[in-house]
Length: 354
Ligand code: UT7
Image (cartoon, rainbow, N blue to C red):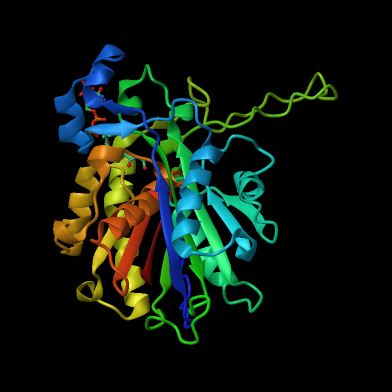
């Protein structure tokens, strides 16, 4: 049941007006996990490349997202009434309703925006970006705020050594716009960006390899006594906590990330030489090395912060984008490829210009 979607080519000029990120202050080094499970720093670093992670000390998912969004808005230099859409990607929302995007809208007083969440697990940012680009084709839509915010610690079983060392919390945000002229200027300050393409796919039949449970199935007072037993499609012993068949997800990642990158380059009529940097989802350093080898793209052109972030799901790409844009490594005019994979299973890649 592997399906894939080819995305589309946008010819309209656009601009990433601003980026932002937020990481909670609480930093937990690998060594600390020896206090709670049978593990060691050597196993974690050699198998994953992870050395430490930021964990929420009580901050909600929406609070982290709001902080990242404020930083992106500050860089963009727009007022919040100019935001037309807020899209949040998260698999760890605080409420089933209101959605996280509406909560962030209220805090920002972005009263002209309409708001929704997407959940494609770690591929969520790629999907949100592609949705934003489609809405920007509408002449009435000018500025889209994307916020990817995740508290994986909420759905992590800290007694399971196979899982708890892998994840971190944090948020990343961007604003994409079709407004190319700075307020007060008559001409755009830079050449308009027009390279954009996306390739997204899903493999629902492999969904069981990465599972976390949400609300329980129906138990209302009118359920007939002889009603059939509820089928828990992905029954697993620890309910809301993530359960993963690590090696199967690893195989999926090392196959589908490079595949998606190759497909999106082909669609865009570009080659790897046209790419300044690959910004991949951060799950495991060995997955990034494998993608680098298969794509024949040197590791110097692959952004990696896995050592400090661990796996922050859909937030990992926009966090890395913001960190390296602010550090000066990523610069205006560069051509970037974002690629991700995750629960669903889902995968995708997009090419864009900074
Ligand atoms: O965002 C998308 C989500 N996830 C991913 O991308 C993850 C993809 N998968 C992976 O990155 C890797 O499969 C893992 C890092 C999760 C695991 O690495 P692995 O090399 O596939 O290890 P494994 O699961 O085969 O486990 C090897 C051994 C096992 O012991 P036995 O059965 O060989 O005695 C595990 O019980 O390592 C043991 N182990 C640990 N030992 C010390 C598992 N976790 C730990 C741990 N510390 N934290």
